[in-house]
Image (cartoon, rainbow, N blue to C red):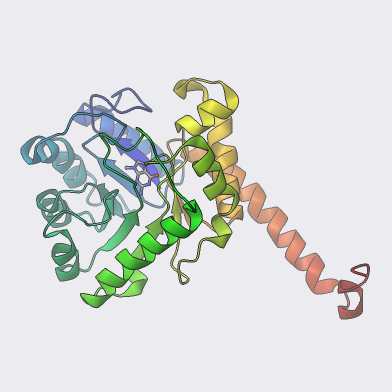
Length: 275
Ligand code: 9MG
């Protein structure tokens, strides 16, 4: 999933694609680089970002979604506002990515009445407050139970499980330690078989680990995406599609070779050496 932020204040690209023409060029570039989905957002979710009203968010995202309607890949709208979801779906988006996991009044009903895909993300607190003092007794357990509950709520309203993707929400109400635990133990997240989306690209946890500013986190972002996929993520939300695709191609080739080697190993050799 390639990211296009049509915002003047995004943390990771500094608002570089605020202009429609620039945003369109960026979206087409990500598609050329191999993005399977383009995620279009008109409101920054960075900690402390100012809220944007419905009209302004629509003014930012709708022209881009309309311009991308025949681009050949699914368009996802990154929003928490039901009015923006409705207009974006009518304009050609077919996936809703909601960092609030459809907790705004009317959001669940809107998705239930459509046939779109939906990404439900975990966040402790709100974008304004989330990084003030994130606290968990058991981050893996709490994130998992929140996501399972949101998925059940949607299923109870008639949304098929095949339409739902779950996301632990790296950086949303989590310290760096919480984020690393989630990444290291992603495969242990008990999400009843739901596909997992991971968004780690350029995030501050990578800055803390490498000491690098947001503009210099390519290698760290690609490494984290590979680890996320190794640990079970089915979708990675990234700024740098080409580099991530290359890295995942290498991971795929190694995984294939390992599976082939395992198939060729006689059954009696597979248990040898285990004591
Ligand atoms: C909008 N946005 C920013 N970071 C994100 C993440 O990690 N996941 C999802 N689903 N959306 C995100």
